[in-house]
Length: 278
Image (cartoon, helix red, strand yellow):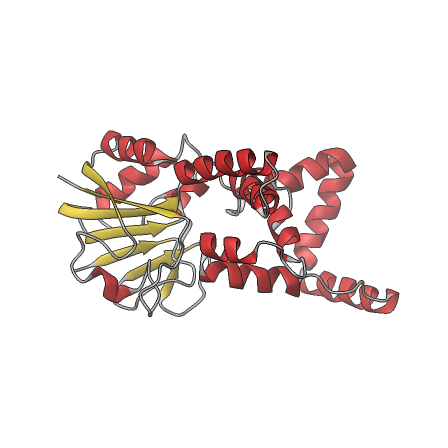
């Protein structure tokens, strides 16, 4: 079997071809997937991507899935993992009702599920309010968050807190500034020139546009119905939902892409849908 893992991040298997926008290991190929998939037609038996599709706009997603279709062999399987919009929406309604009734702990759950719904779509800086929430000590509803995100919640909390250092002294701030300038001289000069030409307000809009195009933002969300319909519209057949350890892919669990070594689910907030290329 030949498998392709797109937008793999740090979650990949050496038996697969692995691609991402940046490489975190020698076995990961660097490529901008907005430009297509850099393989010939009918190369793979399986194409897999996890929490990638929602980073394409609604308009760009069909073209990306047609590329997945193109590189799959006839009878090949596409497996897509995305945040489950239906589950988030139902949990939001439950949290709103119980928080309104004053049920203990549900106010904090409501605060969190609102972030899951909106923050990664509207944030204007890396990490957004999501990271601000995880910097709390203690986090009031940690068990709930950990149950939603699994091991990723621990990593996100650690990253968020690592970025929450005390304000540096003036001398340390100056040292960091000049170190950054020397290491990124071309970028600094281009930004200075752009700010002079555009003015402060227009330059801030340019920076916001750059941030929103770099891949962190969720540009669309899917439930089981909308994702299955999109797969059908892009040439696949027989879409079906499955569990993290359940798949039409032979020996799926051994790759540990959606599950941990102990068999637990890697990203419990996910929805998994598979379909076949005719």
